[in-house]
Length: 97
Image 1 (cartoon, rainbow, N blue to C red):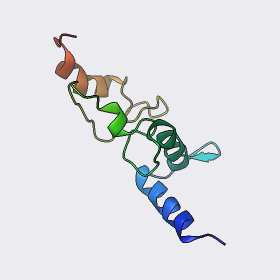
Image 2 (cartoon, rainbow, N blue to C red; image 1 turned 135 degrees about the horizontal axis):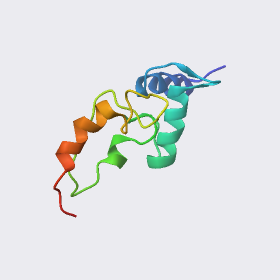
Image 3 (cartoon, rainbow, N blue to C red; image 1 turned 90 degrees about the vertical axis):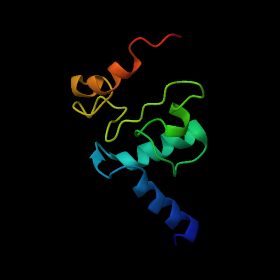
Image 4 (cartoon, rainbow, N blue to C red; image 1 turned 90 degrees about the horizontal axis):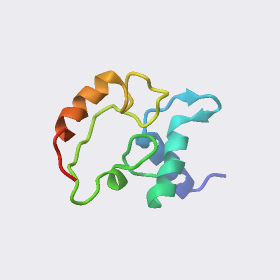
């Protein structure tokens, strides 16, 4: 029998990313486990691999892109696709390190 905490965790996983199947593993389950590895919690917002809180580094220019994913498995919506590069490249060109 599933306890309240297990039910809450499953509900939280559904919030993390939209549910769909990738092979035998659901995207939200993959994201949950990845977020736990990075920041210790699965109930956070992120790109499916890295939580926003780990991506936004102190002192760096902050860029958040809606509906963009870490994975090349989303060919038109990943950071390296031509459509998405145009959204962030102009914002970082000319920055000095």
